[in-house]
Amino acid sequence: MSINVVPTRVVKTHWEAMEEGASRTGRTPDRSTWRIARDVYVAETTEQARKEALEGVLARDFQEYFLPLFADRKLTSLAKADPDMPDSDLTAEYLMDNIWIVGIPDDVADQLRQLYQDVGGFGVLLAMGHEWEPREAWVNSMTLLAHEVMPKLADLS
Image 1 (cartoon, rainbow, N blue to C red):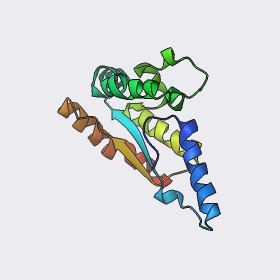
Image 2: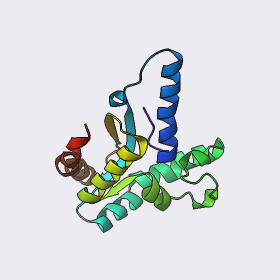
Image 3: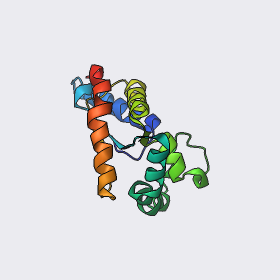
Image 4: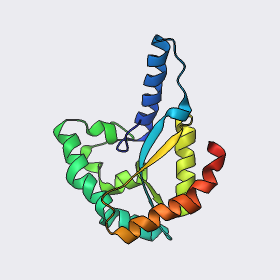
């Protein structure tokens, strides 16, 4: 499983490590068993999706937990698409634009398809949940993901 807090460049290295480990043991890895976790938030408009992601528990959890934890452990480079970017640029807005999957159903489907293509395919998307507050917004997001986004990606399985 690949964790939700790293950009695609890091996720790709996870599969490379799987292939290397499998090769050493004479096994063939199966991409259909690879699970990739991502923070996914879907809304009816792009503006609404971005606002709710940045003003809600998703941004809060990263700003108050993940980013300080990474900084304390000297691991901020893991969350950077460009490892040379300054730590001060590692913000919720940056994460939303580079790691999280946020937007309207069509845009979210496009972002997930791009992730799939960039890493060479995977079996399962694990859409992360963050306390589901406000509950109605998160239920709506997951409903849109299930009913409007995932059918657009059926050809990937």
